[in-house]
Image 1 (tube, one colour):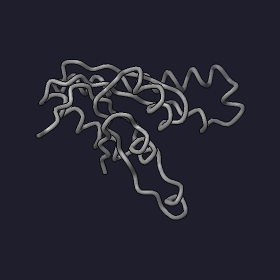
Image 2 (cartoon, helix red, strand yellow):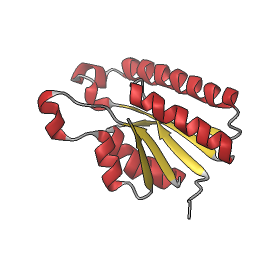
Image 3 (cartoon, one colour):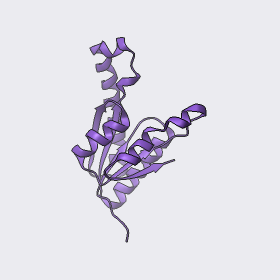
Image 4 (cartoon, one colour):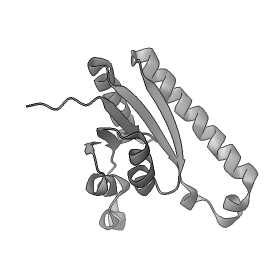
Length: 143
């Protein structure tokens, strides 16, 4: 028995694997007439203390991210996806998507990219691993 998903949530950034996840989500949504939600997270933990306290800096970063996500939306619509929505969230990507975005949107599939870490970073896990472990919905990790 094959499961058919009707509400897809895809996490996006500029990584290669995230782009694979996005392309897969577009194709699946188009072929199955599924609703597509595109999320990107403004990572506040990557800002230094001065940037985090500067409202103009945060506003500029958020505005740039919103424009980037609108480009993803346009790409999905041009590919033939009928129902496309975008979400901008702030915080740690894994925790924010699992704890805030998924409960709000209630997708039935989360599609995310993963990337190979090098050296000592391999031992610390990844956002994809966190989401796969703690997500209350099915997760597809693209590599």
